[in-house]
Image (cartoon, rainbow, N blue to C red; front, side, top):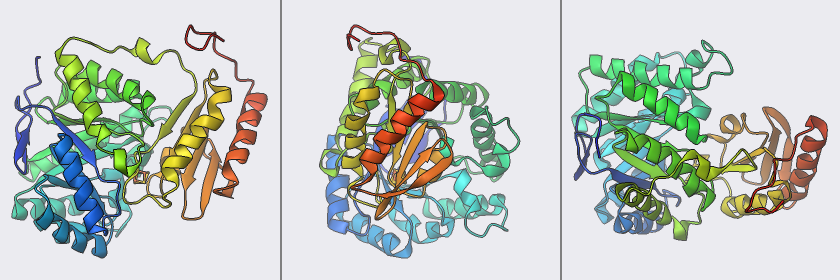
Length: 388
Ligand code: SF4
C-alpha cells in the first residue's frame, strides 16, 4: 500500500509515520483516579493490540494517579489534555505523548497568547522526551479562526488551525508531533485530511471519525473514511471511537485492526455502504470525563426510541459531558449532553431544557415528532433492508 512520506514520530516503544506499521489506538473510559480500573483497562486495550492508550487527565488528583498507573502498565500512554494546559508539567514524566486541542487553549489564562502555551508544551515535551499531538476537533475549533470563516465552512477553520500549529511547532524546532482532524461526518474527515495531507505530506496523521457512535453503525462510518484515506496513502495511526461499555472497550481496537486487515485484503468500503442520509446517531466514545455512568445505556436507549424515525434524515448527537457536549451537539438536529443529574436537550444550537434521566426519553420522543411536524422533513425512499 503506498504511504505518504511522513516523518517518523516515536511514541514510547513504537514509531508512527515513515512507513512504520499503522498503529491502532484507543482510550480509557474508566475514571482516571481509579488506578486499578484504569490499569486493567489500559492493559486490556494493549493486549487487544493498541499501540497507544490514551487517558484523560483534567486535575491534579488525576495527574497523581497517572504516576501510579505508569508503574503498573507497559502500555504506551498518551494523555488527553483539554483545558488546563499547565497540567502537562505534572503529567509528562509518566506518559509518552501529550494530545492538546488548539480550541481548548483559550480556556485557562485567556489573556495569555496561545503561542506561549504551545511554547510551554514544547519545552515540557522536549525536556521529557515525549511526543505531541495537535488534536483538532470539529466541535471545539479555535474560536478566533472560526470567526474568520463562513458559518457553513466547518473545514476551513479546522484546517487553518492545524496548519498554524504545525508552522509554530516547526518554527520552535519541535518536529516530534502528529496531527488529527476529526469530525463526526466521515465525508468531512476525508476532505479535511486530504487537504491537510496535500499541504503537509510530511506530518504524520492520526485518523478518527469522532463520536462515530455505537457498533455496528459506528464501525461502518469509520471504515468508509479510513479506507478512502488509507487507500490513498494518508494516515499513520488511527482510532475507532465507539460508544461501548467499559468492559467492551477493547472492541475499538479489534474494529481498527479489522478495518486495516480488510484494506490489506482489498475488501474496500465505499460511501455507498452507509447508504443515503437517514437517521444518524452520533455519540461520543465516553472517557473518564463522563458525568454520569448511565451515559452508554442512554445512548443505546436513544437509538431504540429513535427507531420510529429510522428513515428520516435526522441527526441526533449524544455526548457524555460538558467538555465537548455543548459544542459538539450544535450541528445535530437534536442534541443531548449529560450532566451529573440531568440531560441537557437541544434542538440545533437552541437549548430546550435540562431533564432528569428518567424524563429524557419521552421528552426526546416529543421533540422528534415536533421536529418532523414543524420542518416538514420527508421520509427517504424505501430500501431493501428496511422494506419500507
Ligand atoms: Fe469524554 Fe466528554 Fe468527549 Fe464524551 S464528550 S468522550 S465524556 S470528553
